[in-house]
Image 1 (tube, rainbow over the protein chains, first blue to last red):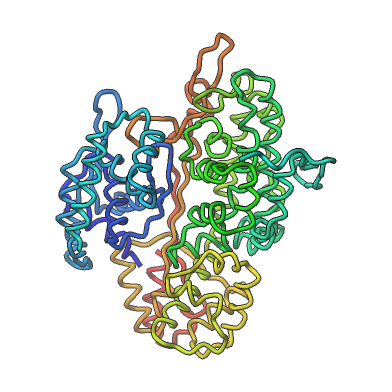
Image 2 (image 1 turned 60 degrees about the vertical axis):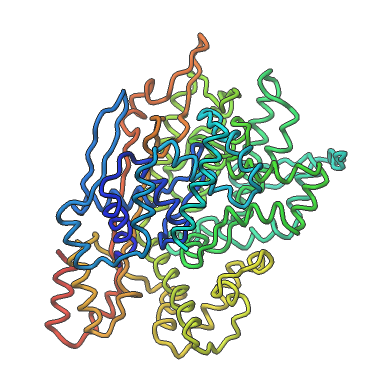
Length: 167
Length: 427
C-alpha cells in the first residue's frame, strides 16, 4: 500500500541529498520519462513539468519521519534539502526494493544544476516535437530563463546519455 | 488560408442555471459545440463519483465547458474596450475555453492512474487529430488548431490568453466553483463573479485585478478553499473513487493473466493492452463504464464482482486516518491471513490543496500570483494587500485516509485476528 512512497524514498536515497524542491520535482519527472516506475502525475505549469502528487508524497514522507527536510534561507528565498533519515534507511532495508539502473541516473542528475534540469525536463516534455521545434518551444515558454543554444544542445546530449544508461 | 467561419445570422442561446444564458454569436463556436467529440462531454459527469455523496452532482463536463466559454466571452467583451487587448485573439481564446476539457474521459482521475492515459494528451489529440473538432478548427486557418492546443496546454507564447483559461483566477475555476456549488446544493461556493469580471484588466503578463475588486477576489479564494474540503475531497466521494480504481486494476490484472470474461471486452481491450487509440478513447463514456460494471457484478472472480457491487449499490469502504507504515504492513498481513486481499481492500488515499500561493522563484509550484492594479498604476501581489489571503497563502492542507471494507472485517470468524485488525484501525 505504500509502494509508490517507497520509490520516492529510494530515489532520494540513491541521490544522497537533494537540494531544492524544484530539483527533486525535475529528477522524478526525468526518471519517469526514462521509464522508471514512478506513478506521479505531472502537468505543465508556467515554469515546467510539476507534480502536485509528488509534493504531497514528499510531505507525507516527512510527516511519517522517513525523509528529513531542512529549510534554509538562500539569497532572499527559502531552499529545502532532502535526505533519507535513519528511520527511512530502516524502512528501505525492511520493505524497499532496488530499482535497477536508477542509482547512476539519479546521481548523475543530482550533479546537474536545478536550472539545467528544468531545461532537460522541459525538452523531455516536448519530446514528440522535432528538435528545432523543441528549441523554439523552450525559447517561448522559458523566455525568462534565456537558455543559450549551447545549453539546449547540452540538454539533448544529456538526455541521450541518460537513455543509453537505462538501455 | 482564409477564415471560412464568420458570425451567425442569428445569435444562439443556451439556458444555463448558473449564468442564466450562454450566448453564441460565432459560427466557429456553434460548429464546435455540434461536434461528436464535444457532444460526448454530455455523457461525462463534471465531478465523477461525487454524485454518490451529493446526489445533485449529476452535471456534465458539457455544461461546465459551455460555462467556461461564457465567462471567457464576457471577459473579452469587457477587454474589447481596452488598448492592451488584441481583438484578433478573441476566437482563439473562446475556442480554447470551450475545448479545454474535451480530452476528459469518464472518471478521468482513476482511468489516468490505472491505464497511464492523460486527458491533456487526448485534448491535444482531439484538437490536432482526425476528428470533427479538428476539421472545424482548420477552417479558421492551418495553424489555428495548433494554437488552440497550445493555449490549453499552457505552452502558448501569449501569457495573457493562457491566464484567462489557466491561472489562480481563471474562467475554468470561476465556472466550476459556481456550478459545482449550485449542483451539489452547498452554499459556500458562491462569490460575486460579476464584480470580478468588471475589475479584470489585460496586461502582457496576464490578467490583473483592479485593487477596488480585492474583496470580491478574497471571497472567491475562500469559496475555493471551502469547496475543496467540503466537496471535492469529501471522504465518501474518495471512497467511491478508491473502489472504482480497484475495479479497473482488478479487471486489468485478470485480463493480463488470461481470465475469460463473460462479457466481450471490446471497449476495454486496448486500454488493458496499453495501446488505446483516439477513436477507442472517444467511444468511452460513463454509460459504457456502467454497462461493464453491471456485467462484471456477475463475474466468477469474487473480487471483481464484489467491488462492482459496492460501486453500483453504493456499499462503500469505511475510512480512518492513515496509519503508520509499520501498522500498514501489519494490517496487510492480517488481511491476507483473514483471506481479504489487501491489494484491493486496504487503500491509502491522500488529498492536498494549496488555496492560494504567491510566486517564489525556484520553489513551491511556481504558480503565477494574482496581481492587483493600484490606482497609481503600480502592481501589488494579492497576499501583500489582503490580510485574509495572506493568512492562507502558501499553506498546504493535506488529508490522508486509509480505506477498508468494514463488513468484510466484521465477517472474519477468527475473533483474535478480527480484534487485532480493529485495534489498529481504531487507534
